[in-house]
Amino acid sequence: MELRHLYYFKAVAEELNYRKASERLFISQPGLSRQIKQLEEMLGVQLFERDKKHVELTAAGAFLKEEVDFVLNHLELTKSQLKLIASGKVGELRVGFLGSASNQILPDLLSKLNTQQPLVSTSLEELSNSVQVEMIQKDKIDLGFVRMASVPEGLEMKTVLRDSFSLVVPENHPIEIADFFSISQFKDESFILFSSDYSNLYFEQIMSIYRDAGFSPRIRHKSVHALTIFKLVECGLGVAIIPSSLKEGYDLKVRFMEIPGIPQFTELSAIWKSVNRNPALKQVLPLI
Image (cartoon, rainbow, N blue to C red; front, side, top):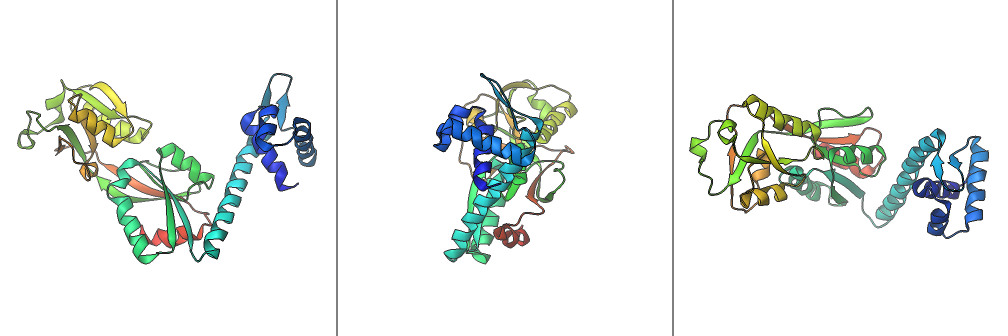
């Protein structure tokens, strides 16, 4: 088996169309078919079910696709690390994060990193919880910041921030901080929520705050981005419950009021793969 077999297989597995895959690879369609046939003969399994109209992965093909993704991602990382090492840098740390990590946790970590490990560069991408987990498992990112109760086997998890909840309202809302004693005071308001795509655990925590207050919220809008939610609140389209740490770094015509007397809290955690071999990650973990 040669590396080209894996690249050819990956293209067909992603396109599920030999013509499109051959165009992507700049080889002839019959030539691509021969390469896939060779691979199947070497492995002793059928990787694709195909007829004149459809191409589908077999169970063995679907399993191989996951493994090939991992192998090729790791190979690209290795090539990237070699170039960085040759240029005198330790390497690159690829970081995924929820938006709420960018207010305090991520800037603090990067500040420490710049001071203590100046030869480590970073690549940052805002991603949902589930996408971060998948990309860490496939070695596409090295470190993530999520709001989850647990992570799959093979991943490590460390809580980095325990946070209360606050209500964000328009700046001119008649209920002032001094008069705020319960979320039930807002039961007749329209609410703006973080989408469950942001974090299902976080979404359920928010809904439990409403249940404990004895009402079901009238939900008008959902978003996965804090700035979008704050702008909607600023425009008078509703109020929203958010992690208290999110109030930092925004200059909008809204007011943040910590919700009194509730048991709920939210945690932001760092996650990484226990067998990750990126040397840059080993330099960063002690700083978390």
